[in-house]
Amino acid sequence: MTYTPSAERYTSMVYNHCGRSGLKLPAISLGLWHNFGHDFNEQTSRAICRRAFDLGITHFDLANNYGPPPGAAESFFGRLLKTDFAFHRDEMVISSKAGYRMWPGPYGEWGSRKYLVSSLDQSLKRMGLDYVDIFYSHRFDPATPLEETMGALDSIVRQGKALYVGLSSYNSKRTREAVKILNELGTPCLIHQPSYSMLNRWVEDDGLLDTLEELGIGSIAFSALAQGMLTDKYLNGIPEGSRATQGKTIRDGHITDENVKRIRGLNEIAEQRGQSLAQMAIAWILRNNRVTTALIGASTPSQLEDSYGALSNLEFSDEELKAIDVFARDAGINIWALSSSS
Ligand code: NAP
Image (cartoon, rainbow, N blue to C red; front, side):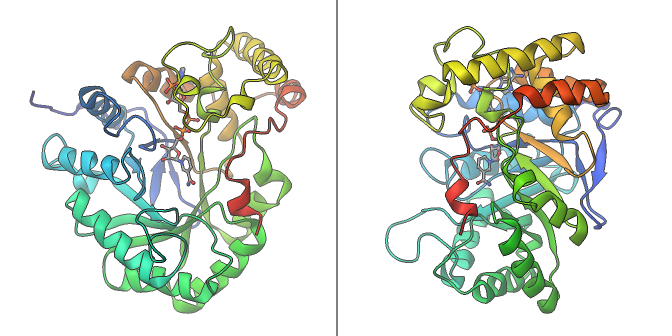
């Protein structure tokens, strides 16, 4: 079926400058971690991406290992770039990353120059692109000198394979070190991608958000809906087909009685605001301009539409924020904690 993007796509999305850079990102970005691999209906994946673009979501976030199998999400997106999005590449900010295990042997993960450069070459081939807009070091590598990892990012930009570079899940201390090296090399860090949600506030405790603000670096908060926990999905049990039933990245211990109590408490506040819980979770992430964009996933176009509705009410009173703080506590769901703790 031929796709013609909505002519209205730029009328209501909010676009925020990414830190002190000239690049603007939509307040909501779409990630292709889950639901864009071989285990998912491709027509639904395609419908989600089309709906995103129609809603003004110009930023699509990928990584070498998104699938399954690893690489499948990039191959899927490459097909879309040749068909539905063939005339719209320059309206998009497309990112990829390398850091987690992609192929066997000593060169298939972490932060060496060998791995980062060859992984990006593979990503570009899968997507049929000459360059990505943003390329990330996906996680800090304690066994590789930071100079080597940052040097690889700098080379990648100089080779024209990425326009900007970013860091993902680096803690505040490592971010400062990495940014200093990048600045000395003349390739400033555009953006940081940490996990952040009402149930996972490590970026506040670690001081990362303060650091990014001080350094003028933008931020894109991933799993802003806590993988679906910050929606109405798990209010009354675990529904069939949800991510929690798929043996993927919501662990058995995540949907505990205590966490369900938190989610119900937050849901009541969302109802009082006239929002769905997903909408309030996104608005909360964007509440004080320190986060450039909320990076979310979706398994249906209608979920995306619901989430997009967050933009209708981004304001919070002090009373609401205090009420949220009672329930918005660490829920033991930060499965990326190890990547940021080194
Ligand atoms: P998320 O937005 O927290 O969770 C998405 C899931 O929430 C959906 O698959 C769906 O679950 C549910 N959902 C979404 N909207 C909903 C709605 N309105 N109502 C009810 N349920 C809703 O995000 P995520 O998928 O965990 O991560 C988002 C992106 O962040 C990824 O695609 C990736 O780009 C990025 N990410 C980066 C890293 C990193 O290390 N840098 C790590 C993880 C993720 P069901 O599938 O159960 O329907």
